[in-house]
Image 1 (tube, helix red, strand yellow):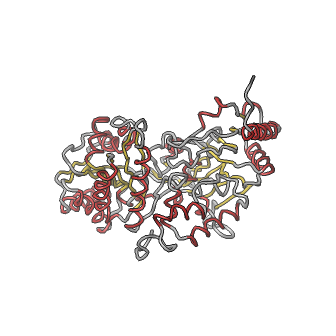
Image 2 (image 1 turned 45 degrees about the vertical axis):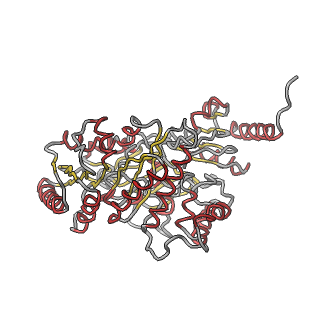
Image 3 (image 1 turned 135 degrees about the vertical axis):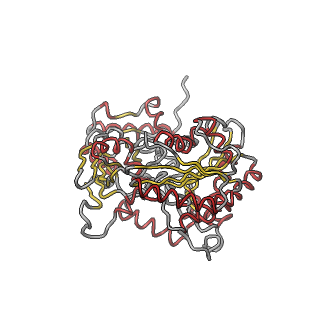
Length: 497
């Protein structure tokens, strides 16, 4: 005799059948997945510690189909989570158990390169690096370069306001996008931004970029392109003390130098990546800095000289300047492969993303060393040092009971320390689900309510990517029992970013 099906499972199956039937009317069979084995590949993004299978996966091929899916979901009050390449590291694309995952990977066409206006109009599923490859014949490229640029999509970059190693000089996604097109939660077309110097009405582009899919579903993006520099050279500087390396970062900016890239790695990270890519790093250094200059040969020569002088005055024990393009790429290869190298020295790692004032870089690294002892876990560190965006990688073994939970607590402590130092809980990875508790530490209840009001203006029922980015009052009340005092963030006298 078969056991009865639990009421909640029966109700879910009935709801799934209702949604599938409605979507079948607007999508071909090849664009719809709902069987368990078919939706499993979509159960997480790059933050694989958090997993949730979606009720249904929709894979539209046209904008008309995107609009139709949204209209169906809005009519049935079904949550929708948009997903690009799934490389995000904050759980922003984690599916909703009772919702539709809107996978936009088939939107992969580069529509137009305008070499005169220096713009590229592309669909949301186009890979970040593919934009630069398409623009290369015109001597142009797209500047933001996340480490995942070979795989991540421009739509995901817009959702998370992604950066990269060259964002210090050339800016984040928000500084390099002119216009986005897409659809509201009701399936209505919407254009935000403008190809002109200004746009009529309030400029909502900066609100949409970094909104993590909660305000609209983006299907097309127009980005700025810039001329490829004639020359780029990189300095690799070694320091025998973390404090000296941190001070060198602040001193470079104070000297009026804005490097094309300014990155830091501590000794454990350097050793991990050197064993992986053989970039020629100094394995005895407490920290190394990678400082890049680009422009005309004359500009680069002058800036390299100025940077070398500052680095040596700050106590660099050794400096090496790339002699050709191959050596420059080799210097950067370790930084670009830092995450992959960490996977070779630990069964699992938990990548954090926070921002601090650049003058506090050494303070943060020393604080993390103390936390390593407290949580009994190792941590290797790589920084976008020029803008204070840190990426500590907490090493753990998920097969050992309690280690994942300790890694999460370790990460939360790092983010709280960022706030205490006058920084932010994110620099480029977004909040997603991973940092949602930490939002309660950074922002007051009144500030969070303003975020919710903006969201409701676009999506009153909060169907787009629910449960992410902005914490509920109840969540903050629970988390605040330990972290929030009297409705105020810790150290309220400190200026915030």
